[in-house]
Image 1 (cartoon, one colour):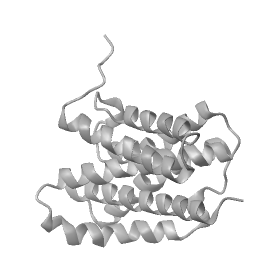
Image 2 (cartoon, helix red, strand yellow):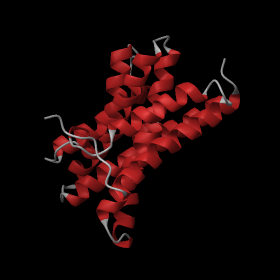
Image 3 (cartoon, helix red, strand yellow):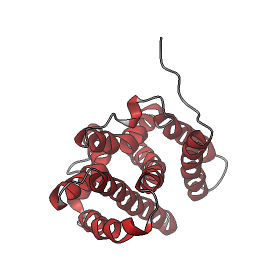
Image 4 (cartoon, helix red, strand yellow):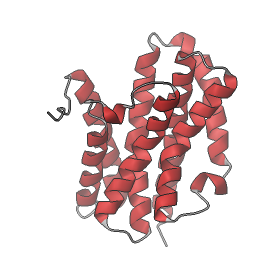
Length: 205
């Protein structure tokens, strides 16, 4: 049985990731001037899309959000949150980037840990961490008629990969809770620095 503090941290990561990804989806819908239902759908698929695919692939069914209504409440809460804040934010794209970046950091480690808990190999766990982090955004971008970030030369999935590998190493060196926090920070930091300094993954010839 996991220690009490670890369970609390994982729940916090899970709920926070759901909310911030829902916010990024809602912001995308607001930017595209979708109606309220369209905004909700975009927030929903962004928040649960990657985790749903991960759970199906590793055989964790019913998928997580179907067993806990808190996820739906968090997604619903993202809608008024975005509408209240949108007039106070100078640039909608900057807010979208921030929430999306936090989301991929949180969900990378969450997906990695859940896959390891199912007894699958570290390699598969890293892949599922990336799936958890990026595929909600892929669905969001497709529905918004945008090129998914994972298919562009932007440092996106690579940041998730780096954070996942850091966690696999750090969990043997420090307390697991600390490894979780460090790994999430690695994903977020790489993504922010990549945008700040225009780092990119080169295209193949």
